[in-house]
Image (cartoon, one colour):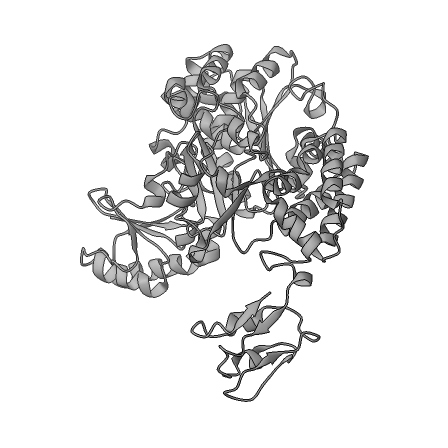
Length: 587
């Protein structure tokens, strides 16, 4: 029997450190000969902390929202009594979890399964066999041909064919070449790269080494956000272990192939997700994009041929080499083969990490895997592609999740963030939020991006304050086109997307803000007011006691009233009003 504790960032934040300590104490106290391992995030962030019990027959019992008291119950009933603890059980072999059983896990194949700090666990799952195959049995051109046949497209956002980048880097002759992993994951609500690096770092190292073999590079660099300390720690452990096994460094697998990997911590600039800005940052310069051509495959890091892919792209490479290109492109669609990892966040019941075949409808991801909207509210939109993406409305929920279909909606696939919104979300405020993000993250090199995003933001802020004017919508659209056309890199070219898609699908909300001075979602403070219905109020006084500014008055057991002049619209009265009365309402 063996125990496995979810020890990704989400699990640790939910209390996994206490669970690990409690498990170790129970093992010691009971004198049990029992292994307790850590593992990465399996994706069920909504159920953290997670604890798996693996019995001697290989059956896995997954417990969710585990507490220290639950640990004692699990030891009493299952470890020593062979009876599962039903109140915490979320999945068994006979009763699979809907969240996991609806997925096809290639990139995430080992996350939540192996101990990411033990190379033997990775190798027991077939790890580094693909690297051995690439080094001992395949030429550089054969590796690239396999990647080409698979149809693997870059999972970092643009969906550019991976093989084409590798081929270009191979053809450009140089005595020094580089392989770079872009782990600069900056989208709000996105955590795909982080979870992969925390849960299965060796798959990324192996993918990078295979890329190095394919293009003739001897040095790999992982550019990772400094805000990911656990991912960095596990990468450092994995790199050292791989060097000890001669899987990195000089003479890999006793061949003439040399390849080593370094880590570069990024300072958290969103624009460094763009490959030329990333290269500038690697070179010690301010992260600003450069004109292309030349492309990085021609002249990248220090002017040398450089291949750049993101974390998920590299994680897929060992699977493709070992399982075959045909297995990979048998999933997904003709133009978007394979699977894609998404981070489900926002107003969703089951938030977390999912991996699904390309072409699956958005509706299935949100309502089957994500189990629908919190509090059973009405779905309104999903933001895809991060702050540079767009909002997809309810009428387009049956859109297939592939690069071309998502682009046609006005959004982009991006690196895989999905932020779900419900009826309480103001779409004008959403556009304002994401544009504020991209405006702050603009490197300032292009006038249209630096000034255009600022002016667009000022208009959106004015609309949210109830000061919108006729013609503002048309002005936003006109400025958006100029920002797109006049920006050098993808940040500026896509920054207006949230504005354009919210205008396209939710124009009525903009018009309500501008013409009626109302926020239909009742979120913009300047356009709403709080009231107490005298017919429903029972005078319990709870709202008056909790009001931070004392603007609610009334006698006990008699209807209360809110002074609109003093009300700061914090919403406390609405939160504390007993549900059976529903006396507080917003207009």
